[in-house]
Length: 338
Image 1 (tube, helix red, strand yellow):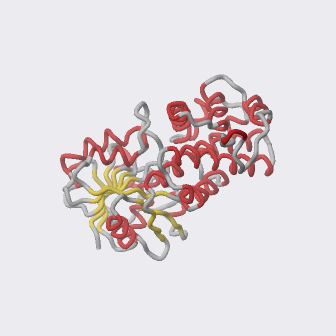
Image 2 (tube, one colour):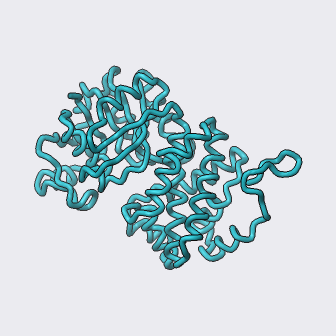
Image 3 (tube, one colour):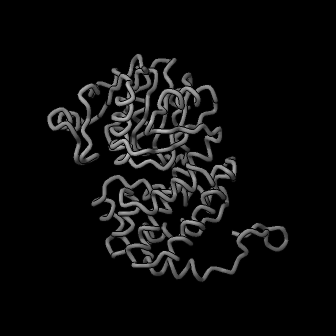
């Protein structure tokens, strides 16, 4: 049995808490919001974040971040844009022996850093890891078989997380490619948002298949430029996460995209759905692609839809009328096709 503290009472954090408690671990959930903690204590669930999943009474609930002391695992279930501030708040109380595990998928605004870079900066004396892969909170919390990946620069840390958290409904693979796992898990939200736009426009399976396939190419292209391994993007944190997020109505990114495709403004779609990581990630990935000199045509067009006044139909037309390319071959003069 391990002492596990989960920072964040969102759907994913709560689902991991339920899963860990069911596997026999000593679990504490911290939230910044007293009303969420009080709601769980009163109703036994948090319908706004994880409806229908009851939170066991043996899970400790707190708004005191100092309760993170003595944890074997500190799991961050915090939206990307708040990750650093919560890490800094928790830092004085996190034991040096605690392993810090991040689950947020995205790029930090302004710095455009991966979340592993943020946690390494905030906890320089701690071992850190990343959990990523196709994993809807609604299904983890209900004990539906789920398979994800743990990645760390220290393989012993990965094995510890794998051995500690794996159980009969939650299977964890080890992958040493931290950058690849993070890039795949983060940028797939952009493609899922675009897939939702296609659904909202009433386009067909052909369109979505093309979008997902070429989207994965974009994700891999920028990931490799950042030092990732190509094969990672064919795995759970690449193709696997892309499939589940582009096709499921559990996906907030897809649901927001559907609204946008139906004519709702991007800002209003995000307001209706809630946390939509792909919204800010599109802006951040667009900026990062320009910084690295990597062409990402789907991301660029979605950026125009979300922030530049481009209509979804105009973005589709722009993608379909791009110069003709070879799918896998290098172009003339040794220049890779994009």
